[in-house]
Image (cartoon, rainbow, N blue to C red; front, side, top):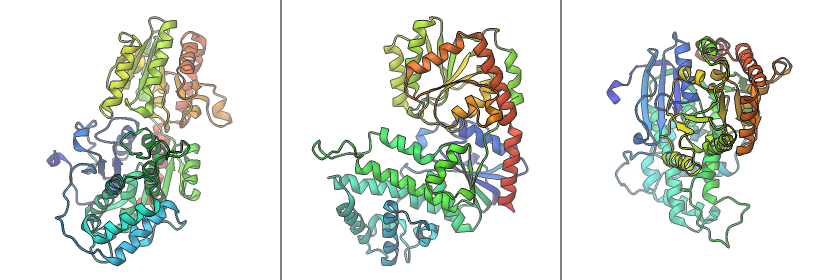
Length: 504
């Protein structure tokens, strides 16, 4: 597979992509593809950061011709470790490293210590802490033991030791990537997290500008994942647990990702938010307000406009949840809402349109729920479908998510004249009800409901499906709103100015 990757000696913009394009389909990946194609005069490169190779099944997108360089790294696969070489460890390097863990708990307004911003710190044996020292040095063992005694509220040292090891090892991998990556005139990451940390290292290593486009708040989404993950240990017994507290290990992982986020915010010269709510969250998480601009997603409206006349005169009683089958999309609430609706509209169908390979266990639970609710002939898991083929067949687009950004699928549905019923997350209320006087004057393009409420979701869908006038008004509002505020041309104009500034 490595041989078919495009290679270059240098590029204009290096994209830093964690778990997205070109191996994962979805809104962020589609946006990345859209941006690369939208600027054919720019030579792009991309670094894809994934978890394990066997979790990705080939490219989901054809690589645009101006993507001149692609390299792929898997942080949680077995990677080459240096041979065991016991040593004392560099005293200066470990003194600096101890300040890193202190910064986890009490972030300094000036950011990370200067030495820890440099990729070279993690690659050199003298004056730094290279990977071999992190794994084998006496000072590394003493450092972990002292942290455990001082800070860990969980009784298992073994779990603590391997949590610290697994948490920190990717830092050294990312430093190695930063130290060997081909030159770029600017770096652009579409999240904080590991990709954002790599971006910060590259900025400090090369002196070239870093831009961040944050579609959803990475730390918020990781917090949701961490609370839902069973692999994070909590070894306290029933008497030791305070129900108001989270386990130490969960807290440690949360603080780790918050630290990566602050480092990326500090390094980025330009930070892009999709809507005002993201901007406010970024500021509360440590981003400087003067760095942030709001640039909504935009789509090629003309691509979907012809679909408006391809639908039957009355909207089909078919709902579609368009997205990955993962917990953050709360597909189970959608399925339960379909059960309620089928009791009221017997011929209704609910489609789940999207890949189900990212979390096979959750996907299996969703299929089991369909069977237990006797919906096998009413709920379809279609896998990927081209939106151009999908939209004329459905009456409503539904998002039951517990977290979203500004979903491209909603804009595409609007351009095709399909109203949206969504939970009150991300920019979904803004899309449906408008923001600002002129936008709100257009009317509503669907309905907004609370999260985790099958009854509310079902009720909102039924109101639109059974009221032709309300559906027609919502459809026209959706069309007018996307044509007025969310066009691809508007988005490209803003990014053209941002790229010009970074590349100059």
